[in-house]
Each structure stands twice: as C-alpha cells, then as structure tokens.
Picture 1: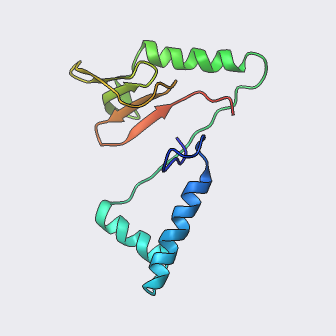
Picture 2: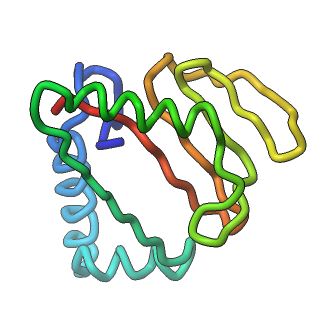
Length: 133
C-alpha cells in the first residue's frame, strides 16, 4: 500500500518514510546505537515480519481490462485458502465491508478503493489492487 504516515501528502510516496527513518536513526545515534540496533530491539519485542510485493504488468490497450477481470474474479468468488492458510476475514474496500469466516459483515471506516484484502489464520494478509502506475 505504500507509505502514508499522515494525510498531508496527496499520494503515498517514500518521502514520509524517509523522514521518519532519519528521525529514528538520529534517535538511536544520540544513544550511541545504530539504526540496526534499534531495529533488532523492535524485532525482539514484536517479532520478525516478512513482506513481499508481487507486481504484474498488463501492458497494451487491454491491460486495464485484464486487471479488472482478475480483481472481479476475486471479488465474485472469495478464496477459502491462500498458500494453504485459511482465509479468516475478507475486506472489500470498494464496498467498505469486511466479511468474517462466520459470515458476519462489518463496515470499514477507510475511504472506498478498488482493493481486496484477505486476513489469514496465522495473522498474515494478502492484498490485491489494480494500479495504473
């Protein structure tokens, strides 16, 4: 989803994350530590996390149609599992809804967007969003 720490920027970009990174690095340097030292402390406290972005290109005149068809397939038929893990909640930001595995539907507070997000049984999640960029 990119980095948008505060909503004063009109788009997600790296500048906000870069400023925060510099602030954190300066904080640890003032304590005689490196950024890596501070990061290791965060890992010890909150655990290690892995993130992976898979970006597919759909060039040409039909690229947007192809992206739309793929997200429509996911929207029309929610997967029960992803990577062997059970899907516990599905969020559809275009409808502002979250559907739990038990069928309970709640309203999402975020602005509407063409994004699907699936929360898995181990606490990890997968998001699908078409992009024109």
